[in-house]
Length: 286
Image 1 (tube, rainbow, N blue to C red):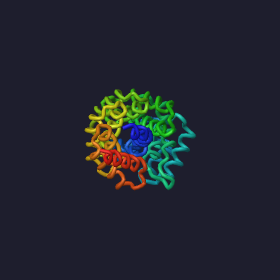
Image 2 (cartoon, rainbow, N blue to C red):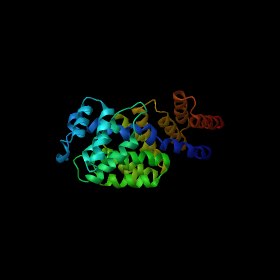
Image 3 (tube, rainbow, N blue to C red):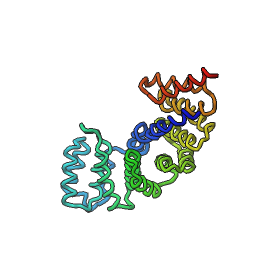
Image 4 (cartoon, rainbow, N blue to C red):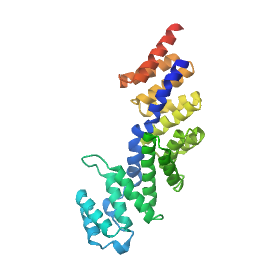
């Protein structure tokens, strides 16, 4: 089994990035879909009553509700320039950058800047749970991409101040602990995460399977990754990783099936190609 273990150092990197890329929309987008069904009018209600009647803010909320986001951004920036302690203006500006797709994509770094300012001004604000989770998710995404432990530490600090029963919080903490190689903690967080969407479940089982692989618990990883494949039969990473755990347990024919499936899904997937060739060679030897 050594040849596949050596190559698996590459596969581990790819699988870890599931959290970043395959699950990127989960970390940044899905929380809104499930927990924030509020319409745009509600989120423009100002926590800072003394600023509510400001002309620029009123113009911004009118533009926001009319979906004229460019104008809303201009008015909010002007509001912040005049009243730098207006927390709701930062929140609304951050929310625009969080939710709205512009020509250049979504500007999550701008979301971060405005949400961090909101946290400074309103550490116990009505929107603090949403804002802190978003900031943490952003730091995880960038922290994993850049291998920046400072970002991950910041994310962990925010997450630990939130509701520990929240499935999104558990998934995010699990991602951090997995990267820190704290596999038992990662497994605990992933296993207890609940009330997840289908795409989040896919991320959960891929990540949980990876944590069990890292601990050498292949039988458990097998059961978990079998679920991941059932959730999304078109996930090449899940097939490749399931093939790996089968191979580690001597189930070479089962491994061959999943490496082949991974290659059907992506004929350019080099890790699956190498693993398939190795398994074929081992089967031939027997």
